[in-house]
Length: 292
Image (cartoon, rainbow, N blue to C red; front, side, top):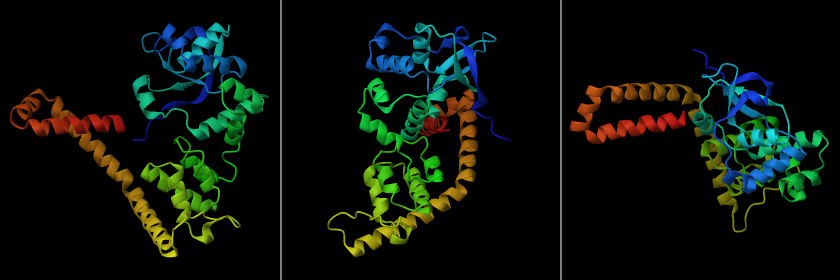
């Protein structure tokens, strides 16, 4: 059975009067620096990131705002009557917030490019976002020298900005391998990126670029790092080949355990005679629910 898409295929311009916030913007929220920053950004630049909404099941024709409640409030205060929205097929804010990471650095990069395309200067962006202008310029050039496949792998990851300096020294194929390893290890720090760079053979480096191996690292240690990196890459590919089947098995097992503990008679028996097993079943079901 094909997976159902999480979002509509296109964005729609919706009237603000049709949007209901998932949670109210309180006075305490209004006093925060985050609210002031978002308010200034929306008023000076406009809404770069669309609101995420879902159909209100209780009120036909209306929508619930899953992400963007502060932006909605600012738009209303500014006298706007409509805004672009991305329509989600799932109306659970909890699910949405667990599946979507907060703004990652590549997403910031694309938002900055979009604002600049609209005519907003880098200095104006820096002033609105309360950051250094050099920071804006660096994020604007974030993907210079980064291949599209590597950028796609790191699209929603919270990668250190300095990690891209290490990736930039690698050829495209090695960039993809390094990005895959970062995702597999869930490590996006500059130190890990530099370790991958140090383990990169000369033939996979951009001509004229150096690995920047740390002081005290011998040729033998470097060769060992390269072998370990190659071994890890092979292991990653083996795991990747069986991931789909393993994930399906886990989902099926979780569903079976969920039905077991939802059965009153079975649940009672487990609590009375195998309490540890019952608690473990519950833990597995709860963990899998948050991971899927």
